[in-house]
Image (cartoon, rainbow, N blue to C red; front, top):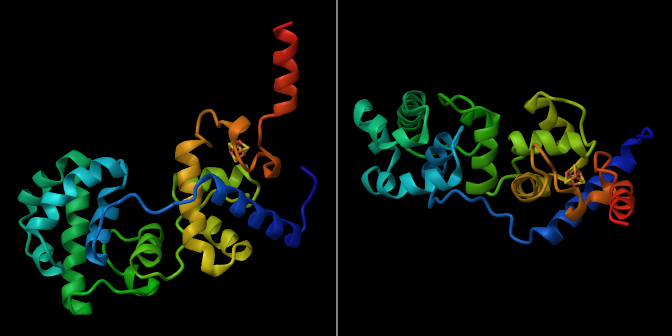
Length: 228
Ligand code: SF4
């Protein structure tokens, strides 16, 4: 690809965002939650697990544990059983109870709404913190999950592989007010079209802006020849 200057990359990133908006008019988060504590628990549970599976487990969980205090007092073995089907249940139980205890002890029972405070909770790294900021507090949060990592590289918006470096690269070229939406768009795009193994470039609404697209013309010409 020809070297692209910073302003051109910014313009292309905006065009990509607008293209994805057309294909994905409602990029809302798929985890079900009613308050920041529920989103924190759901996000911890969603590691290495589908949102669908998490949404099957959380209704009963949130009925039993209504507040951070309830989670802080949870019995380890009981909670492990209750979240077992989401996988990595021991580590997730440690993170949920550990975070809840800190929230009760240091934040008056309320999930904090600042990145620096969220990062002090056990098991909470930047990805989880950005999910909470962006979706529970309406504070811009650029989530870099496996889809955002893969697609931002394919689109040539970053050449980094470390999620934190990718987040900082994207923060430079995407307006702050759009950080949450942009990451939600890429996540949905990864689930619908830009698959890890075989991206569906021929139907991708941003394929003319993507340096990694399959060469659609070559493929079409090849197919036309093959079917003559
Ligand atoms: S053109 Fe292909 S590789 Fe590029 S974003 Fe679209 S689906 Fe992904």
